[in-house]
Length: 88
Image (cartoon, rainbow, N blue to C red; front, side):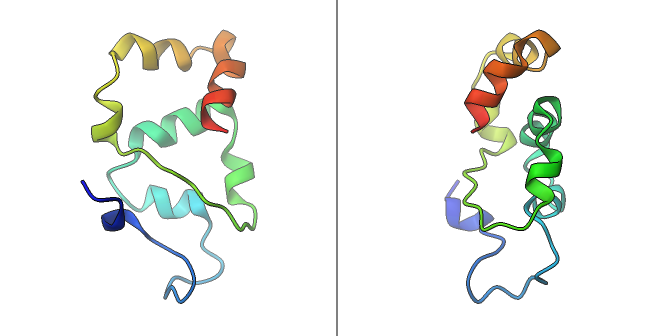
């Protein structure tokens, strides 16, 4: 899957300036795992703030290559610091 297929904003974009990066990811069905991890890490408010941001957002297909137990461990509250290091 080419990354260019998922570019949703940037210079010259027709997206409204009020659209935040989290809303853009939510508008696609391809980032549900990433959004789940962002929420588990408590980064929702950060990504709703004005950027600029560069976000390398793995799709659900990319996350599917990981063992399911890895994602489950990352989402546990006791592993929040590890998850934050992965996402930042």
